[in-house]
Image 1 (tube, rainbow over the protein chains, first blue to last red):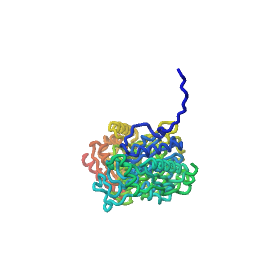
Image 2 (image 1 turned 60 degrees about the vertical axis):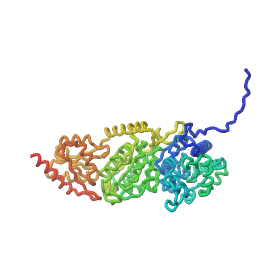
Image 3 (image 1 turned 90 degrees about the vertical axis):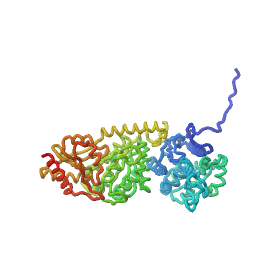
Image 4 (image 1 turned 90 degrees about the horizontal axis):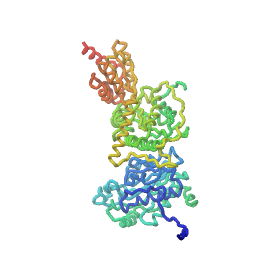
Length: 262
Length: 356
């Protein structure tokens, strides 16, 4: 038998250790999976998986704790920032993050997120903005765009009756305790790569003890929007980005130095 | 430790600190605010966590978070605030994490007032939130007993990984009495193996009250109910006075039990065979002892600062064997011993008349 020459193989892609190998419950074309993966890659790269505690929301990502290979808690609807506050205050050397959708964070939990940011709670929030309530079947969210049809705005969101969609990154950037608040999107590879860099910075902000950090991610919900997955990506770019401009809304002193160090 | 003059709310706070509470989260509300204020001063001094939350909803969810790490955590509030915390109580009970809640009850419904009341009896003993469970509920009748039960509350919470209430009212919360504090306990380390501390060298831990699969959720409920049945069997607490030969027993807890004690002593001086039974654990209700007393007395008189809530539990324990009557004041009115004495006379006379 001929001896096969040893070929050096380079791993270019594998499942992060911080992500579980289980079947997904997310719909085809949903970007929760992408967001989960980015968070998991960052936890791996920072070497903090073993000291991370995640707090899941109520909404489509209610089972986020099943996908992340870290300790995790399931919060009541909107209360993840309060729960994360309790965890972080008694375990300040642990890495704590909340993962929340727009109904959870911008409607029922708006008091909790605003006050956690105001207090400068030293945890990280991953905020999934897909402009709809996904889990309950596509109702109007506080982030639903003007004119957007949902099952509870069947002729399109009438801003005269329901008000305008809320811009959370802009709102939270006004909180003195917020150290890092940015908006990114998941609608193409370039934006996904930018999103990952932001998520990494957000966790680095926490590790440096600089205060509250949040990355808002514009995300796709083809099922709720009743479009195909490719159409959903276009819809983010054409409809959501103009109302929710991507960018850095709060970069506190000390954050730039973190990025430079990397 | 020396006996010193202490306000009830402050005594509760300091007792919790000495019991090793690591985290306090609360929101100001009369008549319990001195408890929060004492924590605001003492907890940072000791390097422990204190946060004045943006609401009672946030406060209880902060407690939930801290408790998930295995730390001893607590909050305190009063009736309207307790209503807001019900969401958190249910999640805490469903996910079986230990924590302690103080409810300094006030007159209701609604915003009501800030006077002493026992109107939250149903709210705290029946389930304290949605779902199918009971919290452990302890009711002190003095500042000293408040201290002792506060310490015990943390031990019970840990032992059963369950929600424990200490309930009193503005009278006990606000008055000063001589009392003795326990020595300072060390903060407990390490955390329980179920706690969220980071999955370092072990499988990850998850704390959740979510279980979508009905058979699995029923199994979880069965486990919870088995735990509650054990608590019901082993944790009934009560005290009594002059019950040995009593024909009429007055049943009251906390402040109303203490006022009734004065009335019962007066009735004894007048030659009436009257005793006092004072439940200390409101859940589990001390039904075993009360059922035994139902075999020997002619009637029970229930006294509460509400429209008749524990009354149901006394009737259940009496099992229809003897009449159970009620005297209560509501809206923050505190009964005078004379009012209870007059009611004792009325009910005692009925007994002696019917016996002839």
